[in-house]
Length: 207
Image (cartoon, rainbow, N blue to C red; front, side, top):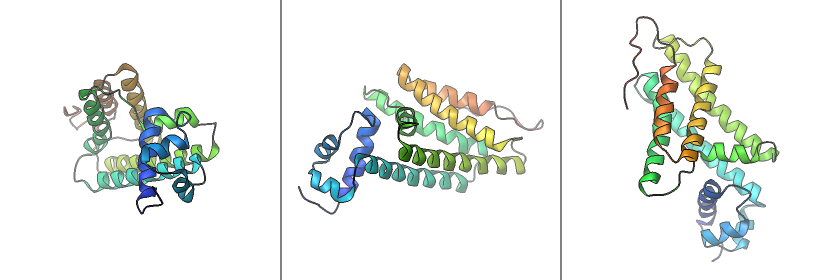
């Protein structure tokens, strides 16, 4: 098959799937081309290397993450409910895989960071950018919640980093234990640790 109009998108989608399932090191350019139904000529027409494709795949993920964060900010709901969405999206995906008797894969960002951080500067830089954007999006939610009196947030940056770390830890543990419920439980525990004003109801609504 030649350089068809959708070849680049197919390569990106295929790479995202294979990298998530197998990791960076275990996937070759040949694997990606075969799974995408394309020849290597098409691959190298769009990307100079597997690294370049991986970075482009991460940028697509970053775009999706920006859209999700923007949607959270636009929602007319409590901050805790906005933050719960982070965990529940991952939980729902893990439940779908478990119901299909498929192994849990964890977070593609966390998996790649664990494999490549410190080994590939370009990929690590892109991962850092995505994590910083994610953190900054959460900081805005927390600062607004502090301003309107919903939460008491003395250190928004540290709290945001803690929440991102909880998401990543939940994904890793759920994958290791093959138990989607870990994501739900850890999410509720993380949200329950957020400090409410003394006059607020400190109960975290059940999912």
